[in-house]
Picture 1 (cartoon, chains in turn blue, brown):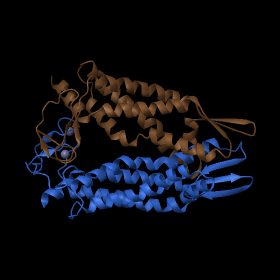
Picture 2 (tube, chains in turn red, blue):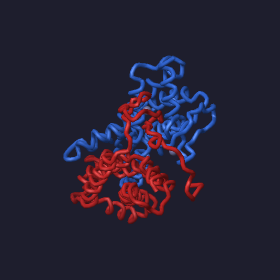
Picture 3 (cartoon, rainbow over the protein chains, first blue to last red):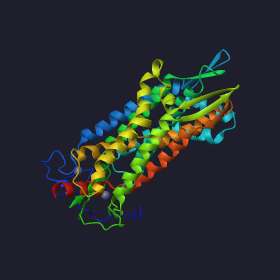
Picture 4 (cartoon, each protein chain N blue to C red):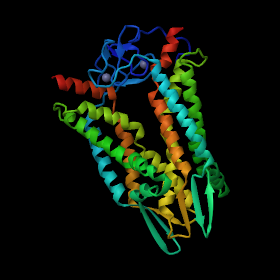
Length: 209
Length: 200
Ligand SMILES: [Zn+2]
Ligand SMILES: [Zn+2]
């Protein structure tokens, strides 16, 4: 970030005809398939890698749709049952005046997942296209995506805790809904998309200019 | 030579002094940050984390009181909440994310770094164990679970009186210990140490 202009040209392992290990950094001849130091699989950049990212990302978006349409949890109280979707749960929390917690759930379940879809798609597209955003900023974006993804699981945990606490022996019962499953899958799939993204592609584009 | 794991820049593989931090000049990723006694500290913290996890699983986690009844919920109950009906597969996932994967990580780290701290040769399959520990890192979600508990408490507050059990505090301590432990680790340093000990 400190240098907004073009950084001085730096020789990469690929330029030197070598393959660097993304786990431990050891450099190998291109003929090596597995890292001699840590045993991780070695990859030169390959496009198949990016296709894996797209596949996970699309799967994540697809299961995110039912996660929002179906109930996340059902509350049965005094004979009548109310079902709550993710958004419905947020609205209810605001009704009770818990704005802070409503904000946490809203950010974790809606803002973060959607922002992640956009960010990963953006990073995937910009590996082959020239964009205004510098490699430094895209690298930062990737680190944020990688760090923040797991926090979306909050709502699934909340549903689990609520259902284990509030059972038949009380006036109310809370049972998890089908959306809990598709939401958990969506988070897992997007995490897979971020994990299979090859960070080095961000910097390659800079070099090809 | 060494290649930056994040951007592939070729860097001179110099020995980094204790307390120094070597980062990539191109992308700024921290490559190595050796700290005195880092290995020993990680082991102590991983051991503490294991003990805390055992406490967290078996002691009551939350207590819910309503209409004169008290209901205790342990971590196990929370995991089992999804055990019936369509959401049954989530049970396995929950157990994995909150308990099984973190424990596997702690054990793998102890196995890899234990011999290192005493200056011994690495244990057999230490490389695979450390690769596993690193691969599990994003999937061990103890700290996310803690925030989930806080949100659940607010949601249920209107319905009944809720108090936190001893296991909750064990779990909070566990999260702090885990974060500390991960901050001591620098992956490249561990790999280099493993490599050096294996060949020596
Ligand atoms: Zn390696
Ligand atoms: Zn770099």
